[in-house]
Image 1: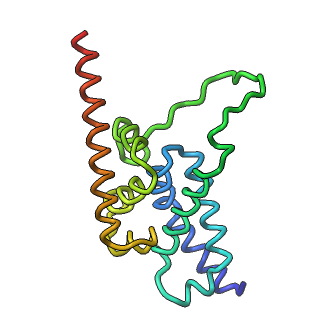
Image 2: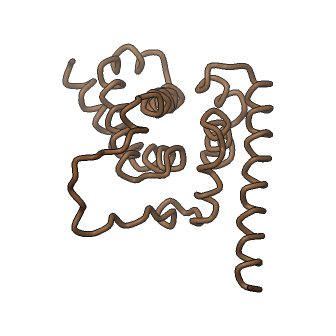
Length: 174
């Protein structure tokens, strides 16, 4: 890669790493995995940077790569299997906090209950504040599909938040 392309990629990565990390966190709910997803997405973007940069703005393409990385990560079977190495960690890992992403922990727990594609539509549409057309490009689907996936995702999110609220109220009264 030419030095001008290399410098422009570094500048882009420096400017977009934190917003991408926040989006990745909202998708997966784990800061460490979010960092890994952003790193993987930036590596994939670097490979095609000169070609993509010539075509114009690369924000949508970058979000699309990030989304694909997250979906690929969810499909990996080793993620769902328990590690049974017989070693108990010294200290429990600190729970993920949504405060760093500007999102409450209850909303983050509710967001974890939303199915992946619906969650992607909700996060990109409402958390990343993208128009329907850009979300459709990132998800590789029609604008109508984005609207329906986002609506269904919001329904699941509302139900999960209501369930959390009901549990909290019943816990206080008991």
